[in-house]
Amino acid sequence: MGLYSLVGSTAIVAALAWVGAEASATEIDTAIVFAVDVSGSVDPATAELQREGHAAAISSQAVLSAIARTHAGCIAITYVEWSSYGRMRSVLPWTNVCGPEDAQAVAFAIRKGGDRGLGCEAMCRTSISFAIDLSVKLLESHAGNASNKIIDISANGINNDGLPVEESRLRAVAAGCTINAIALPEIRLGVPQELTRYFADNVIGGPHAFVMPLASPSLYSSALRQKLVKEISLADPIADVASLARLAMPEMR
Image (cartoon, rainbow, N blue to C red; front, side, top):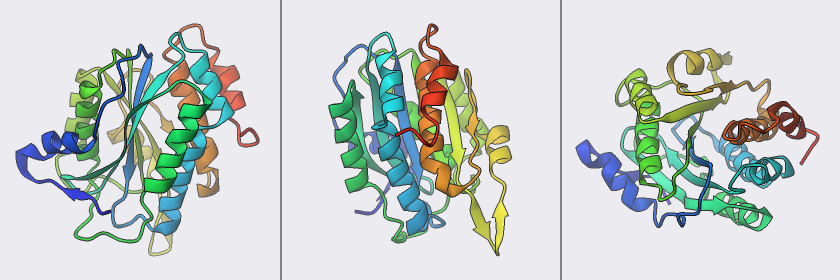
């Protein structure tokens, strides 16, 4: 299924209708939007990295341990794909993850429904600003009362469509959200593009915001695990973030 094309001032409002039913209003500490780039530069290999990386991370023992250590013992997540302004697709509506069964169901949904990188039906540029604005609305629509509201951007390019990304970042921070990011290396004319600094300077924002470094695409899944552990742990002031991060190292599944 291709991205839904939504244009004009109603783009984000209309997009929310596609996300489906919300998770029940279980008390949670953290709500996370996985906002995943599926623009024209995302080839099948990159699409698989993102799809499999998110599925493996959310169902890993390290992340489940971090969830179990929160006050509520649950988090809520939704998984959306985006490209140019007004183009998005919901893969997973708001879903509570409170244990292994929930996590495995989420992983299955991502693996089954996530982008395959087989090309766009129309122009697919990279509107990180749209992804942020959409994610803010998704977090505002969530039925729970999460104190830790996270927008997780995964992308392999700079903002080149829609509104200036800095303006969207300011709106997200003002709404009480934190934007974190992981930048997938993109190669243009045989030269890898350095995106981590761009994300740090222009995209991330809010309390404890960070860009997850990625030394190699092969480490994407383990980097996501570490990223999620850190995000979830920060919601709990008694959590030992350093200890949890060690659990998420590549050799641990």
